[in-house]
Length: 318
Ligand code: ATP
Image (cartoon, rainbow, N blue to C red):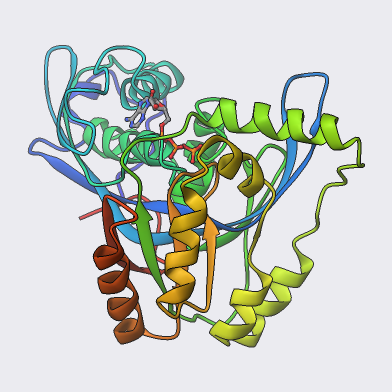
């Protein structure tokens, strides 16, 4: 780790940092528990969530440049704007502003996390940009310092700096690690043909709740945390929960078929990931996950069925 830059210490900041390229790998996230409270006057929902980082990765390469540029390949190439609206550019600019460095870098994104899939791919890319530019520019911030810059960019960005399994509160930006003995969980990730916009899913949840007029208390994560400690996939499967699932299914009724196909394939449990439309299925072990993925592929209910494991670390240089 490079030493932190102090304004009064060094005028030749351009000599700091990496001279070659910096490559950062960042995982997707799923939510093992996603409790959504009522809509607050500030437009946010209070969340109680258990994040879990899984082994589907984006990769961001950063090189020195005279301006800030972004190119990409893979998932979403040709659809995703590479301008100032991209979370990679926003994160690089936020770090540059915070450290008073010129925002100069040539960034290239290799994307495997589907767009608008409920896997927080955009937030993952923002986390990768913070780690990559911090190394490229030699600004040497701690993860906690990067997390403070990350939170205004997106609620999931701080978690993706840390990875693992963590409790998220506030609107997800307050992250604390879940202290359980390390266990590898095996998943099958069913990727849909097209994405779902997160704000639309929250809006649908508010609509469904207003329609039913039932109280919507913020669901605690205690049962899920207790299940994690038991280290038994059947117990964890029974504790998975997502308050956004009904709303995602209302907007995308075909998700019923995906969840049924996973169940028919023998998954221990299946759930919509975050705001969807990706569905994730828990398997007993890696071989079981392979069989479920093969059956989901044969059932033709999704664009792709990938196996993954968790928890994995957050954005890291490779
Ligand atoms: P979440 O799970 O956090 O709700 P998501 O997985 O549903 O997010 P993302 O892929 O993270 O969705 O992106 C949501 C939107 O953010 C995209 O539709 C896109 O318009 C915008 N966006 C900006 N930068 C990126 C990026 N680098 N990758 C993906 N999306 C981005």
